[in-house]
Amino acid sequence: MAEARISADQVSVDQFICPVCLDPLKDPVVAACGHSFCKVCINDCWDQEDLKGVYSCPQCRETFTPRPVLRRNNMLAEVVEKLKKTELQAVSSAHCYAGPGDVECDFCTERKHKAVKSCLVCQASYCEDHLKPHYQSPAFKKHKLVEPCAELQEKICSQHDKPIEIFCRTDQSFICYLCMMDEHKGHDTVAAKAERTEKQNELQEKQKKVQKLKQTVDTFKMRSQAAVDESEKIFTELISSMEKKRSEVEELIRAQEKAELSRAE
Image: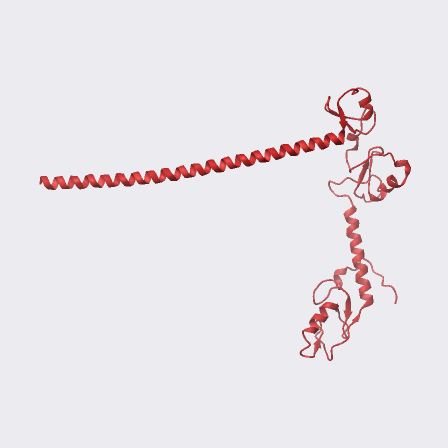
Protein backbone atom coordinates (compact mmCIF):
# COMPACT_ATOMS: atom_id res chain seq x y z
CA MET A 1 0.00 0.00 0.00
CA ALA A 2 1.42 3.37 -1.00
CA GLU A 3 2.18 5.68 1.90
CA ALA A 4 -0.44 8.44 2.25
CA ARG A 5 1.00 11.89 1.58
CA ILE A 6 -0.65 14.66 3.61
CA SER A 7 -0.07 18.34 4.13
CA ALA A 8 -1.15 20.16 7.30
CA ASP A 9 -1.78 23.28 5.22
CA GLN A 10 -4.28 21.49 2.96
CA VAL A 11 -6.16 19.19 5.33
CA SER A 12 -7.03 18.97 9.02
CA VAL A 13 -7.90 16.09 11.32
CA ASP A 14 -11.27 17.81 11.87
CA GLN A 15 -12.19 16.85 8.30
CA PHE A 16 -12.13 13.18 9.27
CA ILE A 17 -14.94 13.06 11.82
CA CYS A 18 -17.25 10.22 12.75
CA PRO A 19 -20.88 10.91 11.65
CA VAL A 20 -22.09 9.38 14.93
CA CYS A 21 -19.97 10.99 17.70
CA LEU A 22 -18.79 13.96 15.57
CA ASP A 23 -15.24 13.52 16.89
CA PRO A 24 -12.13 12.62 14.87
CA LEU A 25 -12.26 8.98 13.82
CA LYS A 26 -10.87 6.45 16.30
CA ASP A 27 -10.04 2.98 15.01
CA PRO A 28 -11.97 3.71 11.77
CA VAL A 29 -13.95 0.92 10.10
CA VAL A 30 -15.83 1.01 6.78
CA ALA A 31 -19.38 -0.21 6.20
CA ALA A 32 -20.51 -2.00 3.04
CA CYS A 33 -21.90 1.29 1.69
CA GLY A 34 -18.44 2.89 1.88
CA HIS A 35 -19.00 5.21 4.84
CA SER A 36 -16.51 5.16 7.71
CA PHE A 37 -17.19 5.31 11.45
CA CYS A 38 -15.44 4.79 14.76
CA LYS A 39 -15.53 1.06 15.43
CA VAL A 40 -17.15 1.57 18.84
CA CYS A 41 -19.78 4.01 17.48
CA ILE A 42 -21.06 1.83 14.62
CA ASN A 43 -21.11 -1.26 16.83
CA ASP A 44 -23.16 0.61 19.45
CA CYS A 45 -25.64 1.65 16.74
CA TRP A 46 -25.99 -1.84 15.36
CA ASP A 47 -26.24 -3.42 18.82
CA GLN A 48 -29.48 -1.47 19.22
CA GLU A 49 -30.80 -2.92 15.93
CA ASP A 50 -30.10 -6.56 16.82
CA LEU A 51 -33.76 -7.16 17.74
CA LYS A 52 -34.96 -6.03 14.30
CA GLY A 53 -32.32 -7.98 12.47
CA VAL A 54 -31.96 -5.16 9.95
CA TYR A 55 -28.92 -2.89 10.16
CA SER A 56 -28.68 0.57 8.61
CA CYS A 57 -25.90 3.03 7.86
CA PRO A 58 -26.27 6.03 10.23
CA GLN A 59 -25.20 8.33 7.38
CA CYS A 60 -26.97 7.18 4.19
CA ARG A 61 -29.60 4.87 5.83
CA GLU A 62 -28.80 1.95 3.48
CA THR A 63 -29.93 -1.29 5.14
CA PHE A 64 -28.08 -4.60 5.46
CA THR A 65 -29.11 -8.13 6.35
CA PRO A 66 -27.45 -9.95 8.05
CA ARG A 67 -25.17 -7.74 10.17
CA PRO A 68 -22.15 -6.83 8.01
CA VAL A 69 -18.62 -7.69 9.00
CA LEU A 70 -16.72 -4.46 9.63
CA ARG A 71 -13.25 -4.07 8.24
CA ARG A 72 -10.64 -1.63 9.49
CA ASN A 73 -9.88 1.26 7.11
CA ASN A 74 -6.09 1.09 7.36
CA MET A 75 -5.34 3.98 5.00
CA LEU A 76 -7.82 6.31 6.73
CA ALA A 77 -6.45 5.31 10.13
CA GLU A 78 -2.93 6.16 8.93
CA VAL A 79 -4.02 9.52 7.55
CA VAL A 80 -5.84 10.50 10.78
CA GLU A 81 -2.87 9.42 12.90
CA LYS A 82 -0.43 11.45 10.80
CA LEU A 83 -2.68 14.49 10.92
CA LYS A 84 -2.90 14.25 14.71
CA LYS A 85 0.89 14.12 14.99
CA THR A 86 1.28 17.04 12.55
CA GLU A 87 -1.17 19.22 14.49
CA LEU A 88 0.42 18.31 17.84
CA GLN A 89 3.84 19.27 16.48
CA ALA A 90 2.44 22.55 15.18
CA VAL A 91 0.90 23.36 18.58
CA SER A 92 4.09 22.38 20.39
CA SER A 93 6.19 24.49 18.04
CA ALA A 94 3.90 27.51 18.43
CA HIS A 95 4.14 27.16 22.21
CA CYS A 96 7.95 27.45 21.98
CA TYR A 97 7.87 30.79 20.19
CA ALA A 98 8.42 33.90 22.31
CA GLY A 99 5.34 35.98 22.98
CA PRO A 100 4.64 39.23 24.83
CA GLY A 101 6.45 39.23 28.16
CA ASP A 102 8.74 36.30 27.22
CA VAL A 103 12.53 36.52 27.00
CA GLU A 104 13.65 35.83 23.42
CA CYS A 105 16.54 33.58 22.42
CA ASP A 106 19.44 35.75 21.22
CA PHE A 107 20.62 33.10 18.74
CA CYS A 108 17.42 32.34 16.79
CA THR A 109 17.89 33.92 13.36
CA GLU A 110 14.29 33.81 12.11
CA ARG A 111 11.25 33.68 14.37
CA LYS A 112 12.51 33.96 17.95
CA HIS A 113 11.94 31.04 20.31
CA LYS A 114 11.31 31.46 24.02
CA ALA A 115 14.48 31.48 26.13
CA VAL A 116 14.72 28.83 28.86
CA LYS A 117 17.98 30.06 30.43
CA SER A 118 20.22 33.12 30.43
CA CYS A 119 24.02 32.94 30.80
CA LEU A 120 25.68 35.59 32.94
CA VAL A 121 29.08 34.89 31.38
CA CYS A 122 27.89 35.08 27.77
CA GLN A 123 25.36 37.77 28.70
CA ALA A 124 22.87 36.12 26.35
CA SER A 125 19.65 34.12 26.55
CA TYR A 126 19.11 30.72 24.95
CA CYS A 127 16.19 28.56 23.80
CA GLU A 128 16.17 24.79 24.40
CA ASP A 129 18.12 23.99 21.22
CA HIS A 130 20.75 26.73 21.47
CA LEU A 131 21.34 25.98 25.15
CA LYS A 132 22.57 22.43 24.48
CA PRO A 133 26.27 23.39 24.03
CA HIS A 134 26.28 24.76 27.60
CA TYR A 135 25.43 21.27 28.86
CA GLN A 136 27.47 19.27 26.35
CA SER A 137 30.74 21.19 25.91
CA PRO A 138 33.38 21.39 28.69
CA ALA A 139 34.15 24.96 27.50
CA PHE A 140 30.88 26.16 29.07
CA LYS A 141 31.25 24.18 32.30
CA LYS A 142 31.98 27.23 34.50
CA HIS A 143 29.32 29.44 32.90
CA LYS A 144 26.58 30.69 35.23
CA LEU A 145 23.07 29.87 34.00
CA VAL A 146 20.08 31.63 35.53
CA GLU A 147 16.36 31.88 34.82
CA PRO A 148 15.58 33.82 31.61
CA CYS A 149 16.29 37.49 32.22
CA ALA A 150 15.71 40.38 29.80
CA GLU A 151 17.99 42.78 31.70
CA LEU A 152 21.14 40.68 32.01
CA GLN A 153 23.35 43.75 32.44
CA GLU A 154 21.72 44.38 35.82
CA LYS A 155 23.11 41.04 37.03
CA ILE A 156 26.69 41.95 36.05
CA CYS A 157 29.00 44.12 38.18
CA SER A 158 29.65 47.28 36.17
CA GLN A 159 33.08 47.71 37.85
CA HIS A 160 34.50 44.20 37.50
CA ASP A 161 32.26 42.74 34.77
CA LYS A 162 31.55 39.69 36.98
CA PRO A 163 28.22 38.08 37.97
CA ILE A 164 26.58 39.72 40.99
CA GLU A 165 26.24 36.81 43.41
CA ILE A 166 26.87 38.39 46.85
CA PHE A 167 24.87 40.72 49.07
CA CYS A 168 26.68 43.15 51.40
CA ARG A 169 24.54 43.61 54.51
CA THR A 170 26.81 46.38 55.75
CA ASP A 171 26.17 48.58 52.70
CA GLN A 172 22.85 46.95 51.72
CA SER A 173 23.97 46.35 48.13
CA PHE A 174 24.52 43.48 45.71
CA ILE A 175 28.15 42.95 44.67
CA CYS A 176 30.46 40.50 42.89
CA TYR A 177 33.18 38.43 44.56
CA LEU A 178 35.89 40.92 43.49
CA CYS A 179 33.99 43.74 45.22
CA MET A 180 33.94 41.62 48.39
CA MET A 181 37.75 41.34 48.24
CA ASP A 182 38.18 45.06 47.54
CA GLU A 183 36.05 47.93 48.89
CA HIS A 184 33.69 45.56 50.78
CA LYS A 185 36.48 43.64 52.48
CA GLY A 186 35.58 42.74 56.07
CA HIS A 187 31.91 43.59 55.57
CA ASP A 188 29.02 41.34 56.59
CA THR A 189 28.29 39.49 53.32
CA VAL A 190 26.16 36.53 52.30
CA ALA A 191 25.26 34.79 49.06
CA ALA A 192 22.73 36.83 47.10
CA LYS A 193 20.50 33.79 46.74
CA ALA A 194 20.49 33.21 50.52
CA GLU A 195 19.71 36.88 51.18
CA ARG A 196 16.93 36.80 48.60
CA THR A 197 15.44 33.68 50.20
CA GLU A 198 15.63 35.25 53.66
CA LYS A 199 13.98 38.46 52.45
CA GLN A 200 11.26 36.45 50.74
CA ASN A 201 10.62 34.53 53.96
CA GLU A 202 10.47 37.81 55.90
CA LEU A 203 8.08 39.25 53.35
CA GLN A 204 5.86 36.18 53.59
CA GLU A 205 5.81 36.47 57.39
CA LYS A 206 4.89 40.16 57.12
CA GLN A 207 2.16 39.34 54.62
CA LYS A 208 0.79 36.73 57.02
CA LYS A 209 0.80 39.27 59.87
CA VAL A 210 -0.88 41.88 57.68
CA GLN A 211 -3.50 39.35 56.65
CA LYS A 212 -4.06 38.36 60.27
CA LEU A 213 -4.34 42.02 61.29
CA LYS A 214 -6.80 42.62 58.46
CA GLN A 215 -8.90 39.70 59.65
CA THR A 216 -8.81 41.12 63.21
CA VAL A 217 -9.90 44.55 61.97
CA ASP A 218 -12.70 42.97 59.93
CA THR A 219 -13.82 41.03 63.03
CA PHE A 220 -13.83 44.24 65.11
CA LYS A 221 -15.86 45.99 62.41
CA MET A 222 -18.37 43.16 62.27
CA ARG A 223 -18.74 43.09 66.06
CA SER A 224 -19.04 46.89 66.25
CA GLN A 225 -21.71 46.90 63.53
CA ALA A 226 -23.54 44.08 65.32
CA ALA A 227 -23.44 46.12 68.57
CA VAL A 228 -24.74 49.22 66.76
CA ASP A 229 -27.55 47.20 65.17
CA GLU A 230 -28.47 45.65 68.52
CA SER A 231 -28.47 49.02 70.34
CA GLU A 232 -30.58 50.54 67.58
CA LYS A 233 -33.03 47.68 67.93
CA ILE A 234 -33.19 48.11 71.72
CA PHE A 235 -33.68 51.88 71.52
CA THR A 236 -36.31 51.47 68.80
CA GLU A 237 -38.22 49.01 70.99
CA LEU A 238 -37.77 51.32 74.03
CA ILE A 239 -39.06 54.37 72.13
CA SER A 240 -41.99 52.32 70.84
CA SER A 241 -42.77 51.18 74.40
CA MET A 242 -42.56 54.74 75.74
CA GLU A 243 -44.82 56.00 72.95
CA LYS A 244 -47.32 53.31 73.85
CA LYS A 245 -47.19 54.20 77.57
CA ARG A 246 -47.56 57.92 76.76
CA SER A 247 -50.64 57.13 74.70
CA GLU A 248 -52.08 54.99 77.48
CA VAL A 249 -51.46 57.71 80.12
CA GLU A 250 -53.01 60.33 77.85
CA GLU A 251 -56.09 58.17 77.36
CA LEU A 252 -56.33 57.63 81.15
CA ILE A 253 -56.13 61.37 81.84
CA ARG A 254 -58.78 62.08 79.22
CA ALA A 255 -61.04 59.42 80.74
CA GLN A 256 -60.63 60.92 84.21
CA GLU A 257 -61.27 64.40 82.79
CA LYS A 258 -64.45 63.20 81.17
CA ALA A 259 -65.59 61.50 84.36
CA GLU A 260 -64.94 64.67 86.45
CA LEU A 261 -66.78 66.88 83.96
CA SER A 262 -69.71 64.51 83.95
CA ARG A 263 -69.80 64.52 87.78
CA ALA A 264 -69.60 68.33 87.85
CA GLU A 265 -72.45 68.69 85.42
